Image 1: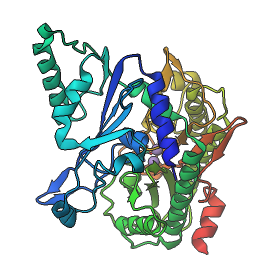
Image 2: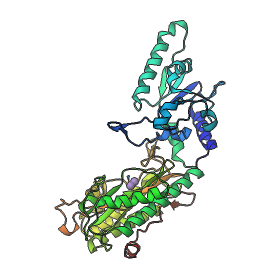
Image 3: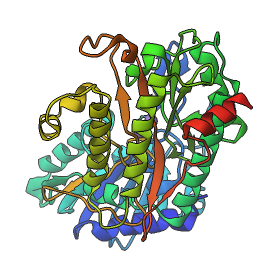
Length: 436
Ligand code: GLY
Ligand code: MN
Ligand code: MN
């Protein structure tokens, strides 16, 4: 659990990076309609949640470092007995300061009266434009009103800037509490993949395996997946973002499952690929071994001080060597790598930051150089090989095989911890689990 103290520390760390005499305006997510009278499940905006722990829509956090009146303010929905009876509990501004540790709170309906006076006299406004249309327009309106009062000596904010650079750099480094939640999300997700391996058999539909994954998430307290689960069998394993999940699986297919739960706003992101009938064919095993070797070599390359791109380059080296050995790639190794001729088989990068968002925030490059890894960073390692069913350059026996293996790692001082090692990835271990 993230404590109220930690949320407060985050706000203060961010305010410490803001310029003098500035103000930051950070909106919550809003509810989104799915179809008539039905909303998508509400998920708070990650930036907003990171700074508040507040999980209601229609809210705005305002930070004013150095203010003698209130440095942290929350605008939120007012209490409303009738609305709460229909749609559920609201915290309300009276309780927000004690519950969420902000200095003051106001009803969101009063924001038009209160916020313009807070903007007045500020040299700089931090606001990520383009993500919340209503607030974009409100802020433009407030600034225009202030301009209209310039002759009476009102100081108008002229410098607008995005806060994300500072905020996302904070989010990139996970605290002990965040690491503990992410480990737990990894354990739950690993158990879900084990369950899918154990229950899979020819004749099942992909969505039934998806149901087994979701079953384990829910039984373990994770109400939502961190992203739409991919359950791709046969040729579908070669479609990177396949989410239809409606094919009937057959003996002889591989099935690729890319699924992870979201626990207390933190994501896990695991991929395993295994044979529907529990036994790899020769071709499947040959390609699988290459991906596994690439993934293990990449994980071994993770250590503080290594460049981010070393992890990807390691996977490319192993995959190119393996595909050359199987004669799926021919010609000069140097040229294959330089011209990225392997990208017919391996077209994505080896991983991404992982955290509150599955593709988490944080810069990968700094001043035109790949970033160096540091303790506390968390990311995925997920090489793959996908032989398109329509690839006429290769022998038919390889076509339609898609394999990815993905784990989540935490950079430590001496290397890394794999947070998702509760699900097997060695061929023998998978076959044994499926047989048992
Ligand atoms: N599940 C999304 C990804 O692996 O990047
Ligand atoms: Mn994934
Ligand atoms: Mn991933």
